[in-house]
Length: 396
Image 1 (cartoon, rainbow, N blue to C red):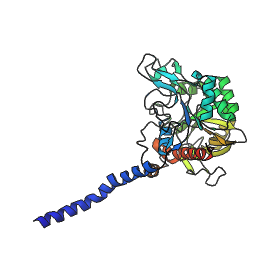
Image 2 (cartoon, rainbow, N blue to C red):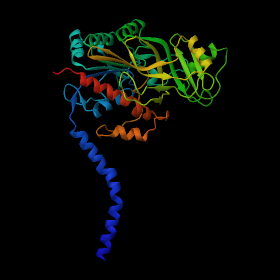
Image 3 (cartoon, one colour):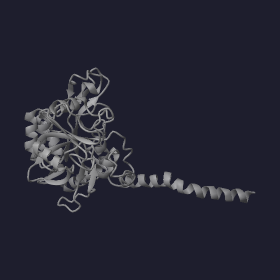
Image 4 (tube, rainbow, N blue to C red):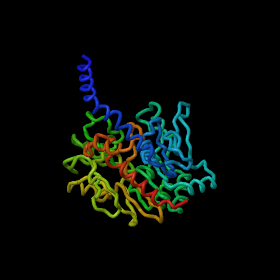
């Protein structure tokens, strides 16, 4: 009898072994490997003014990459998503939160901040508005609580640029609600020029089906296009800061459904990224000076009719998506999209090999999966930027 029980136990254990290896052994080994990998110093200053909730969706994916790559601040600590940034900090008070602003720094503190940092990252400067916290009249423009580039941001940017540090800026850094004068200073320092246009893909332009199309866009389009609207199906909405709006219909004005981010396999900059990644979120259209190299570019594959529309809008056939410029020992990067925006949790970064696993589970072609864009494009790009920056650090 005992022999039969022993044999049954062996058979049962043998069946459980693959599950035990998958659920316990592999994650444990992954954690141990991450743990023994040495931490490295990299001082990163992140500016995120668009923080209406404690999800920190505009910068938590950046902090995930920093911790996974084991980059720590000058105190030898990993960056805390809820405190280690400049911007807005939401709470339950009547003012909805508080701000930690670069304008609050003295000249001495500003110089010290610029001297100590390795990376200055403008994740999002759009800001927070009353309708982020309460219901407001849909016909009224929501009141800004905090947001836009300001003098403190420009002062730090100027200090950092003179020291040839690495600067990264994303979509909307220089757009509304940033004042025009501040924007001009940002453009001059970075060697960029915003065309005034932003754009976004919508999978359905039928307003009875898709309620995500903003009412203001619908009203302005109808008003500017002789009371007409678009055919049903996918489309791309274009919005200019002067109030002009335009839209491209899939199959008529462009092909391929979503805008694509294209990266040449053989390139001067040496970044290893997928050749084609669909991108359905907001992006801005910028012009760059000749010192920049294009890492990736947007391709909406316009038809002849679409090309004519682009010419009338003063826009080129292709738009920069990610660009880099070498400045002494540092580099300037502009990412012309809402790349770091991640609504879903990315889980713990303390397991070696997770990015490879997630890339395998998230199809690069699935534009509806926001995590797919992060693991297949943004995380590889950001991690390579961080590693290059660390490699160029001068010995202390």
